[in-house]
Image 1 (cartoon, helix red, strand yellow):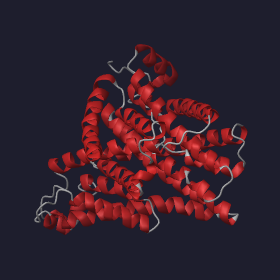
Image 2 (image 1 turned 120 degrees about the vertical axis):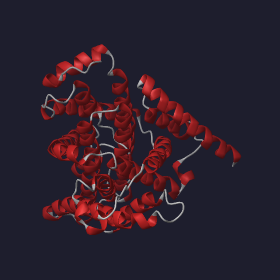
Image 3 (image 1 turned 135 degrees about the horizontal axis):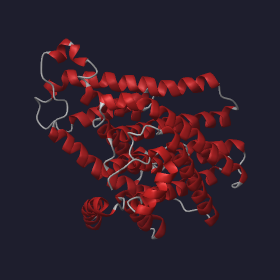
Image 4 (image 1 turned 90 degrees about the vertical axis):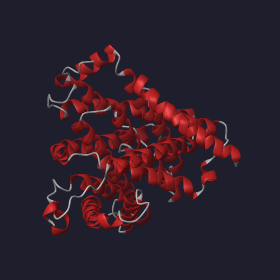
Length: 413
């Protein structure tokens, strides 16, 4: 027990050191933390995911909720409005193209049948909020591309979850209604957003009274968990609700909510500097745990799967680079903003969780889906990290400038 507590303390200091090194060297801390998990997990066998029991996946989910909420508190409504069209095009196009690439490789290289191949494509179609958000915060992107990436990672998580469960329904029942599938996606987005906004209004109405109680610095975070759990319980996306709640709390004046008499009669500061500092620290600690746990949870299959995963990732990143050129036509985007956007296609928590479901449902090839997904998670995060590290090199900037065409505006680097 004493050794475990010692290691937990050392890990926090190690994570602080990695964050500092990220700023100085561009070596992402998330990659190093995941490699630590791989070393103490699959390689040395010191710990396994089973050692954590239900606590492991629970804290991983909590990490995702806190990261999304904290990210929502940093989004500006004006920038958000201008980014919606770009976000929608990038999210849907990149999801569909990624799923198509993965499905074709599943069919012709992994020899999966049609349904398992499409399941693999849907599982890997999105980007990871838990990876993307900490990295773009550390890289200090401009507001608009940062907002696009945050929203994309949240929206594609929903598309992955709805898509995988729809395909599993086809497996168990033999069919799925297209209208119901589209309705599920819209409901997951629209109703979750509405719950998040209404939840934010409700919290603004009672916040003044709540702060009269002692020790309430964590009360807003506890409320976020309540909204997340209630939204998931209703069958919608708790992650989107948490993001919408964060946006509402920091943009309520721009939403026109001061017209509500209870809100107009007093000055409200939903999140003061102490609150924001607390949330940033919570994100830091949970992020540290999440990536170590993710490394511990990775399954290493055959060498062939590693090569297939590497091929998938290269094709996905090449597709995303081309897509970024056509979507980010506005010359106000700097070369650095466009280049970093093209790099942000790592897979993470949603893919890792969904990957285990086909095997549980008895889908033929479920083990291949699981092991391939875990390998793609590792390779995609590694490739993202290496590209971010290499970007400051003049040769890399020149290459991105040529590839992105009109996006190649001066960065002053």
